[in-house]
Amino acid sequence: MGMLQAVFLDVGGPIYDDENYVAAVLTALDELRAADGRGAADRATFRLLYDEVRAAQGGSLRSALAGEFLGDRARRAELHERTREHWVHPAGTLYPDVLPFLRSLECRVRVGVLANQEERVVRALERDGVAPFIDVWGVSAIVGFEKPSPELFRWCLEQAGVEASGAVHIGNRLDTDVRPAAALGLATVWLLRGEAAPSPTPEQLSEPDLAVPTLDGLAPELFSLMEARA
Image (tube, rainbow, N blue to C red; front, side):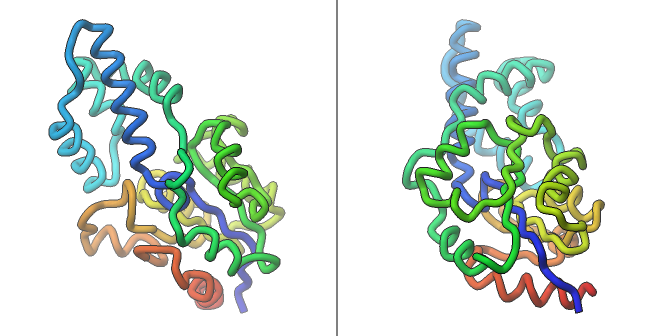
């Protein structure tokens, strides 16, 4: 019988609303455009481009935004650094299903965050009551590795003391969550909110082990999934 030993979660999308990132990158774009002597980024154009990247579940959003709004895709690094200054998770943006889900796993498995995030996310998770449930802090700005490279996943597995076959990763992107996790042998859950595809195709839905709209009632499904994979 397969045994679920560890559950890892991305932060933007699974835990906090991805609109927090949207707000940060829009602020960054507006500041960089102002420095170039231009007006604010057009919000409708931004949303169209954002949704295109969400639908594709691949490619660099930062590169696309830099090309469209800053005139040069090579400015993606500049945009990234400016976005980091503004990327926060305000009170009230924690999804309501997060704490009930974590309580359903308490004392049963190791739980970790596995995310491309700034170090300040730890303070937000402490403020919102999530931190007591977290055993592994796989935050890219702290660890030094970023998804989709396998190093962050391997680091989290090592810190949890489990093999990939005993772990599941929950994320809302195929390119940075589901695919790299599956390549290492983790079970995968695609959470269909935030930066997930707005209208997933059958091919996209076939990639993860599970695709779910919320975390509600997910814990029993995870244990069943691991038994079925054994």
